[in-house]
Length: 423
Ligand code: AMP
Ligand code: GLY
Image (cartoon, rainbow, N blue to C red; front, side, top):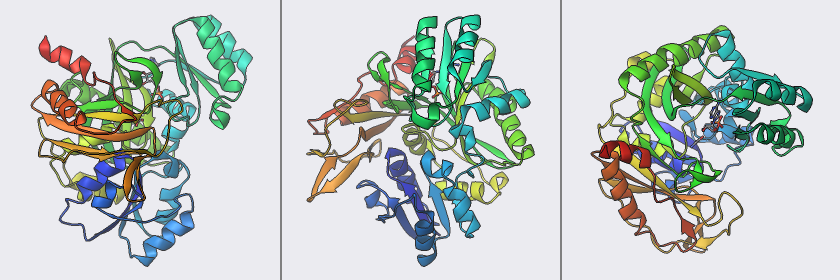
């Protein structure tokens, strides 16, 4: 099979590493890719916003299958355009990508099909939103409707904070994404990310993971794209997975199909495990980053036929097998992230991978023959262990061998699971 992978982050490096192990693979390209992905695929400098250029390249190389990593090209309809050109593609249509692209769309779907989630209202102006907040009281959650790079959500512990967040959205802090606001009930519990594939009809549960969104140790400081993750998430027992499939995932798949937007791709459900059971916080329509890195480490099966079955409506014919071990990834980021940071700082040394550990590249580039950091999140040091405690020790041992002066990481990734394992 000739494959083109779209994206350039740590998630795509993990996907590329796994796809490259497939005996089905004949030729492998990535656009735009990164220096880590270059170990597995030929990098192509395509502008992925130019769908015609992507299609032209795919035709020229007789690409059989395109895998789209990030959300932006999905929300922009790249999967639709590739499929219209007759090219099998992993990733949902623009219409189905609204599950991530519009929080209001997802909340309305939940309401129509009785999917458990926090009570909510949608607003296009500030005053009625504020009125609703005053009626409901705090804690309460304010969300910009559209894509805001994970920054459009305020979990307000006081009414004052909630009212300020509403003003912030409508005053343009998140651009067009904040033109509509969702006000949602606060859900109390433990969070988990649940990954599952759908070909439009059939669902295949993958695995669970736990992200660490805050920049600082002890879950302090501003939200980021994710500073580290581990899999599996102990809160997702097999009984909880079963309930999630039945109460959340299956009604979503059948509801999307009924509404004329069948979903093909990966569901990444952000769940809150409350006293009542699993409730949906949000959907993403792609693999999480850095959650994907730990999932790919744990996946025993060949990824390529699983992704291809998802894209071609034959998911009922495949299975996914997982290692029982835990995997944990530590994100190394540029000092200053998620605020401003220096670009093009030199990375002097990346330690070699082993059976148990691997460093994925996220925001790196080659400049004048040297490896430099170009992004906020730059490297993902990922390791296995018989439990999270062991995976954590191995990941930090390898992290300490990275030589990059401008980098930093959290030192407590996995703390909740480690505490559980000690108890
Ligand atoms: P989201 O971008 O929707 O995943 O929200 C970002 C983070 O805000 C989530 O990972 C949760 O930690 C928190 N959050 C979002 N919605 C709620 C809610 N209804 N109740 C409590 N916390 C929430
Ligand atoms: N790590 C969270 C995300 O990919 O959305």
